[in-house]
Image 1 (cartoon, rainbow, N blue to C red):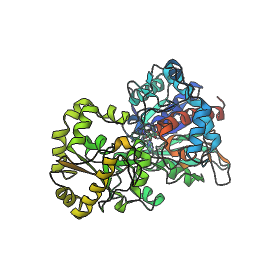
Image 2 (cartoon, rainbow, N blue to C red; image 1 turned 135 degrees about the horizontal axis):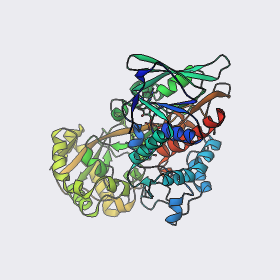
Image 3 (tube, helix red, strand yellow; image 1 turned 120 degrees about the horizontal axis):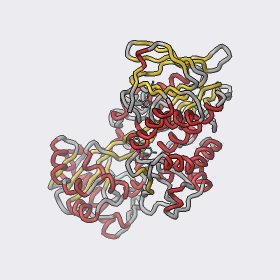
Image 4 (cartoon, helix red, strand yellow; image 1 turned 135 degrees about the vertical axis):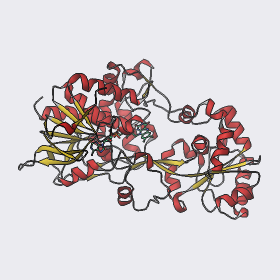
Length: 483
Ligand SMILES: Cc1cc2nc3c(=O)[nH]c(=O)nc-3n(C[C@H](O)[C@H](O)[C@H](O)COP(=O)(O)OP(=O)(O)OC[C@H]3O[C@@H](n4cnc5c(N)ncnc54)[C@H](O)[C@@H]3O)c2cc1C
């Protein structure tokens, strides 16, 4: 893969400048180049892909993959799923456009050699809409980079966009970027913003979500990726906002990696800092919805508790959530014993033969925790959860020591939204008019497409939106410059 650094020259020119070489930006660049546009991509890091490298895969309806697997999933069905889940709070015209595009995007990617399969995000998921590339999303990024090279798209690494310039009539006319200490000026008629949101900026997350306890929410993995540059540059030139504060939050999640899959299983018991159960653990089939329950708890932390019997049961039967099972291979299961001991040594979980030991580590009165467990075990015995109506098949009494407790908190996968866009992915200003020549894609622009809780029935909404909004932005930017 040819990598260029912009520092060699101070003045560049192209039809379209794309900011960010992640899923949204590269889909836009490749699409615009396919239409005949000259494109430069600016990427602040030394490698492409951004968070799209971590994603499992995009959603789609009416795709060739679904046809081959005899899966019926229509555009209408997915549109209704997303709009009703989010109570019609979204930009319906944009949701429709993106979903209508999604099957064709899979066709486009398959033509480039990407193979997909259709896993379940949760048991018995229907319709199957989640498309995972057999070789992972990095393969899609690699393919986009190859396309860029073949069609003359220049990807300038270590080059961070700083400012978008408008001419006197309010049309896009350029970008100022920095490569090291060198300022670079790019002349262009169109810019596509795709910097991935602000999930790595604690300051912005706090600003847009003042109730979050950031001490416990895990944002670290996005720190060098997503600092809100796209939002800042768009707002500076008059863009309106849409969806600030929407995040893909999931949880309970844990820093104790090997315990992650087990800790969010529906069979466990989750207690808050007071040693009280607070929700139906079987809600963990959507870790995004479960996280909302966790956010209401003191300090937004909880402890997932299980016993030796539950651990053995999971070892023999595997994890219940198919997605988690795929993440936690058999090899990992067989290493749980040793891994848990290591996690306990780092104080991320505790293993104890008594409830007193567990209570001491959590910091609650032993009698309070024992009362919670006794009440829960009684519910398991009669197969009815009086408190939270948990699915009876997940009611497994905790009576076999050693007992385990894992510290859990919410985690952030992405932020959704900020820059207001229409269904053509044009950036909209405060007078509700498009800023001429300016487009946005991916997380920066997802405020009208995604709600405040990630919808598991539209699994793949993050990178799915990135690829589809990128393609739409690329097509419309190319058409704007006359291609
Ligand atoms: C662990 C994890 C798992 C996930 N799993 C899924 C999943 O299974 N399905 C799903 O749909 N979504 C998933 N997501 C979310 C999904 O990855 C994102 O929603 C999507 O990839 C966002 O694409 P993007 O193009 O907006 O951002 P990115 O792919 O992150 O691209 C943004 C790029 O912009 C660059 N950049 C930032 N600022 C500048 C600047 N000033 N100048 C130049 N370049 C800049 C960044 O370095 C980055 O390369 C997951 C996210 C994470 C973190």
